[in-house]
Length: 160
Image (cartoon, rainbow, N blue to C red):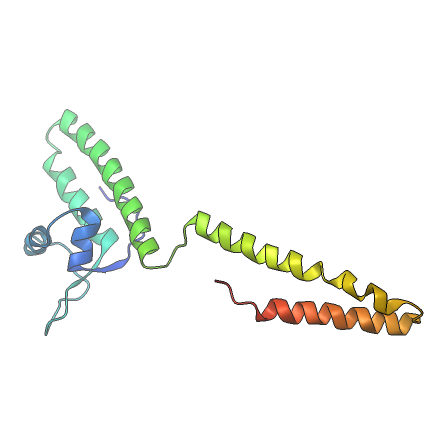
């Protein structure tokens, strides 16, 4: 029984952490046929596809339970639970790897940038005293210069 998961490439230690197991258990699984992407050599760790390993394990558990309807139902529930846990663990690993940003951090960064934009555009009326007695082309030029200065300032701001 395979569950459709999108896997990530992980080391032996990362796989153990992702699944809440010891590295020794992962090595034992490997001896029993656990899929390996790359076998580590010369001090490099083995590499695994997290989804392939989880599916391999779920298949083994499901085959072991095929003789008993209650056991099959229990394994089905365990399979769904394991898939949900594995998916959450993969998201957590991705977040730790900076592939995902927590929503609250992204929202705070966007709010800060909007504040910078608002403050910069509020300076545009500062040109009003310079407009007295000017003709339309001069007014347009002064306003365009101020807008360009604000936009230049905004493009120079680096997100913190």
